[in-house]
Amino acid sequence: MFKTHLIMKIIVIYLFALLTAVTGYSQQMLTLPGVISQAQKSSPSYYRARSNAMNSLYSYRYYVANRRPQLRLAADNTSSFLGNISSIRQPDGSYAFNRSYFSYTNVGMSLDQIVPFTGGTFSLETNLQRNDLFRPDTVSFLSTPFAIRYAQPMLLYNPYKWEKKISPLLYEESTRRYVEDLERAALEATRYFFDALTAKQNESILQANVSNTDTLYKISKGRYELGRIAENELLQIELSLLNAQTALEQAQLNKQMAYRELTRFLNMPKDAEIEVLPPADVPQFNVLLERAVLEAANNRQAVLEFRRMRIQAERDVAEARGNNGYQFNLAASLGQSQSGASIKDAYAGRALQQNQLLSVGVSIPIVDWGKSRYRVKQAKANAELVEIDVQQQERSFEQEVYLQTQLFNIQKKQLASAGKADTIAGLRYEITKQRYLIGKISITDLNLAQQEKNTASQSYVGALRSFWNAYYTVRALTLYDFEKNERISYQFEE
Image (cartoon, rainbow, N blue to C red; front, side, top):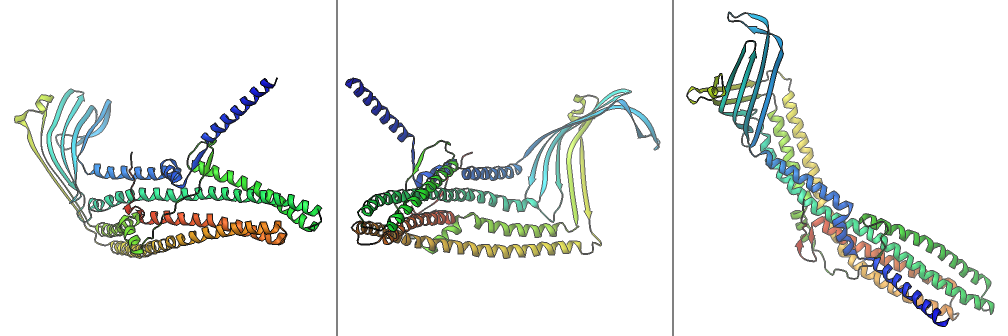
């Protein structure tokens, strides 16, 4: 019987150890660098940044592809097998309404190339047309083996010239914005991490409060029974214990909610067991203001955006001047054609005839009541407004870099002070508790020391949060790693 009991006890201990090992293994310990790294790979902020980057990439590729030669195949057919009544000119010049039975088919291929310097389109074409008349039954072909065409819609405004200035800037903006978005994801991850760490810290503080208060209550109860303290003091300690237990329950709930928010942000499984660890090391460096402003000007997307906004304003003025009612259209073509009763006859080399076509159109406004002039003035006024807005944004940009840099340099000192205050408050509480146990001070003094200890501990975590928030804010504003002295970059893969 004793052996059986011993064996069962060993089995229970073994299963408990195994369960503890599995539970410990499944629990993930999250550090701030790990949370940020995971956020930059799997968080919703990462996927938004990636989608925006892909959108801009494809937009830029569309711009590049649009400037390359475009090969097109076109085919169309017009048929009237059951007959169609239409007005047909007679040999004597008169018109008669006759029913005709026909089918017209045209197939062509063209190679088109935009001419960015002029805004026109240069084309190389070839096509074949077949005409079928069913009553009487006749077939004819018209071939154009080779033709050169050029179309110039307008000379006063060239959209391709401005597109060449703006589209590359938009693409460069997107590459910088991608880096900036990932740094913003790091900043967002810092907020979720410290929400969880703060909740964990509050739970630890309140657990310690409950444990200490419970110990004090048991000791005070014995002292009360011996008549060394008044009933009022015992009741005060008991009330403190009840309040601490209630606060602990709320803190445990807050911790669970903060942990779930962190796992949701990181796209972790719903049942993931995590534990956050406070940052052990703090970077020891200062950021020079001049260097921060310089790196922000070299790396930030906003700087390119300011330049693009100015160019777009200039483009709008040029477009208003170009679309002032004066129109000039030019179309020219040169090629060879031949008709015949068969495809072979239509492509007979000796019979090919040269075709030339030149079309010029001019439209000049005589009276427009100042419409064109007012449109140009409106575009200029908008350009002035854009310039004012850009100047204000540039000043705000520099001011934000300045303030956040100064804040980072100050936060490091405040963090050191908060850490020292936390240590002192903890020592003071232990000394005060010992003095209370020997009856040297009242319970009021002990409660005050405990509150100061809790406040100092919470202030230290708050200072830790503020420091790392300022750290990643400076990185996001400058896109520069001052700890490694290098520009921040991330590789983007489709």
